[in-house]
Image (cartoon, rainbow, N blue to C red; front, side, top):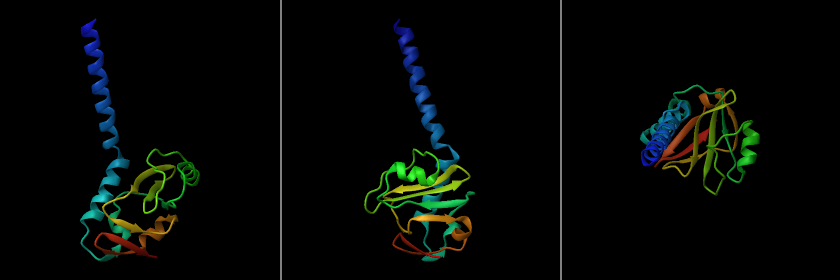
Amino acid sequence: MKKWMMWLMSLVIVSAAVLSGADYLSPLQKNTRSLKKQMMNNTRSEGFLIDFIDFDFDMLIVFDESMSRKQMEEKLGFQSHHLREGDPGMHNMVFVKGKEAVAYLHGYELFSLELDSGIYLKSEIESMIYHQKEKRYTFEK
């Protein structure tokens, strides 16, 4: 009986490790990590936002910080466990391809993004200029 319980516990632990690693290796997580890394390591004071994005997407949705998760999912058109209820100063952004999130930024990152809430098509992002000072990004269309 003890061997059987030990085997079962080992299986549960290994399964949990594999599943958590699978999320870490997902395209969504890879894209998000790449985007954050590029923005954190950026030393240029000005450039195009698209230069940080090395994945395909159709649009960027920037949510108002006061929106509930339910409201964000309604605007998004599908459920996403990566959305977080907003607080003042917190950002919630999702890059979307079709009906799937392909990258996201939420929370209080080590950089600040000042971008009005709304839906931005890829064509708008491609021409959007950023200004950066001390990891505080502002954008102009």
